[in-house]
Length: 331
Ligand code: SF4
Image 1 (tube, helix red, strand yellow):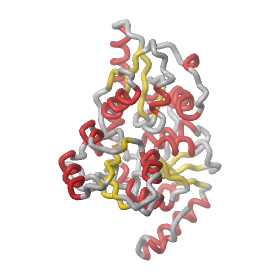
Image 2: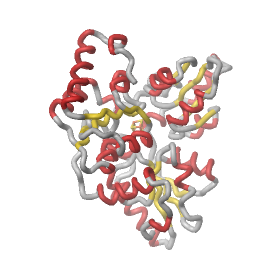
Image 3: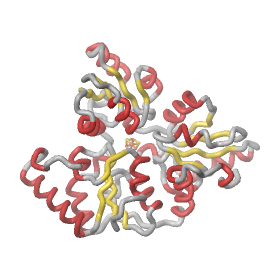
Image 4: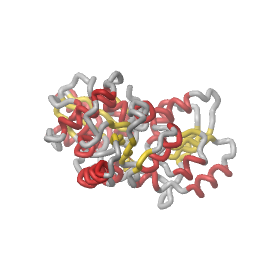
């Protein structure tokens, strides 16, 4: 799974890798890391993946402890699917601007308003959301399974899609299903500059562009492929000849693409304010914090009341593909 640690850091880095490996054994822990984490953390992980892959992996790892290297809603998701396990998050302050853009009380008010107007709705919620928002939802989706889940919503019901307006607009386009969209967005994907991207395309005219569906429409429209992070890996794998790819998603995804499909050349599409497009929330997790949380057993995601209802929605949406609409609560 992992490359030799001597290739990636200084002597003190190597020491910390050894410390983490020893603590993993002592604490019977598995490390799950999102593709947007620094490469040095992904290299130490037992599983790397997008939100969907990691949520599913969290239900399968045999260890007593899960250390989730990602942001808060992801660690919450792992806890909801594994109430009996200890779930640690290296930095409890690792939030998500997209999740923050849809507070649960505001969603509850919007649902009430729509129902008061006599509209029959089901709420389809992107996984980048708090447990309280998931608990108010009928379905939870990731960029990897959103189309399939949307097809499970009965045609006689309207869809309220939260919180990402860009992903929602993309799903309207690819499914042909009208939706009521929440006005939220991811601060990283929002910042890609279409002008910079077009400049890169002029410099590398043979390059293909891949974009995450959280990107605004003007970026998606100029791209050769739009898909979540797992779908991006599948897409570039299809090209046998070395190819240049312009990549419009969080910059650490390049590490994963280079590791999995090294024959190609990957170029990050720059953002408006900087050329790195790194998620500042993901970046709060460091090797030192990973080591310390393993050593001290904290910060820990503790069970909360709303987790029960949210975990039922998660299981129906992500884990059990046979769940049917008849299992849904009334709208
Ligand atoms: Fe949230 Fe965007 Fe960071 Fe992902 S990249 S964790 S959606 S702020």
